[in-house]
Length: 287
Image 1 (cartoon, helix red, strand yellow):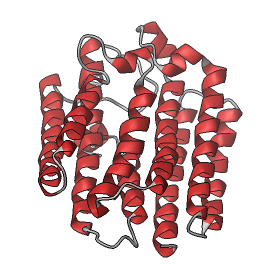
Image 2 (cartoon, rainbow, N blue to C red):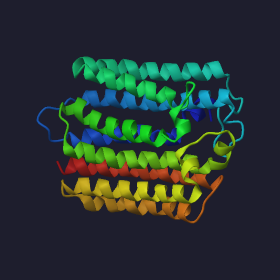
Image 3 (spheres, rainbow, N blue to C red):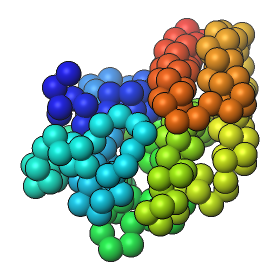
């Protein structure tokens, strides 16, 4: 596989696509919608996610915190690409997100500029800068806010120019599942992160409580999504997601560790993707 595709971390990309699809589906049935704006919102979210992944690779690589890893190879830490090239890839990804976001702000609201700038800065300083907040256990908060609430509610807003309670509820569900992806990753890396003083939430909580957090996020996310979908009369379809979620939850509760958690990460990404598809169809059909 091309090294730049590896660096973009394809398994994390559902975290960018799902909130946009769900947010757009919430807008179905509104009196005045602009679907092309939803496409631009997708570009913003996807490029922001890719930018964060490259920025994380760069920052962790130059710090040396990726030198010993159990998970997938890293571009800088694994010597696959020079640090300056990975940094440039991150900047170009953020630039693409900024351009698409600028267009959305022009046609919708100038306040979106503030949200866009905050998103990019948060993406860079997650592991970048002198005091990255991702090293202080705040990574999950970033993911929940920007790849849950902001991406979902923001998409509903740019498409329909309305913010609804349903969009907030779905944002919570999507954000919880996105957090579960990060928790899986950090659960796998507890030992190596502790060695390099990377105080992720998983390091702070410890192995046992991190596993409990994972279960709460997955189960809670699905249940919140079901409750929200119930408003449109089709919550039963969320049962499909529950069936897909059984596998990663069982593995984590059974003590999966090391490379076993790489498979769990893939399973968790599937849960989020299936949730996105089911929720999008459910919300659209029930409008």
